[in-house]
Image (spheres, rainbow, N blue to C red):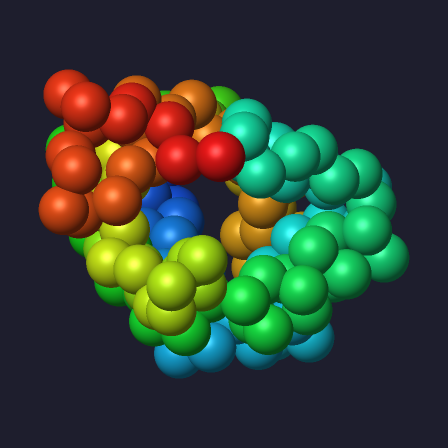
Length: 155
């Protein structure tokens, strides 16, 4: 019976981590609520967005999301192909991202799309699972009208 209980616990942990990731995406897509997003991370967490910088600790991560909410006018995070491995009180996850966004450009708003891979570490806390590390490895971040063949990374 203990084996069945541990298997059920593992499945519950995986679903809780999926819910954490979906909450993260939803908050990003609803205007980057910095306080709510920061609450999803451990106090010593790292958020590394590659071309968007690396932020360590609650205060720096919060400032990043505050600034992002003032710049990104629209976003949709589509995450797929997840692999989540639970090992007791910690877990790792990998997700693929396709993102659409509206960003300010020289001549007004620009439609942007990006794609990359999230590699994440999660920690079980008394409040539930939280992000300890989020690393985003971008494949492209480009204007929709130009595409990734003509301009792989928008500067």
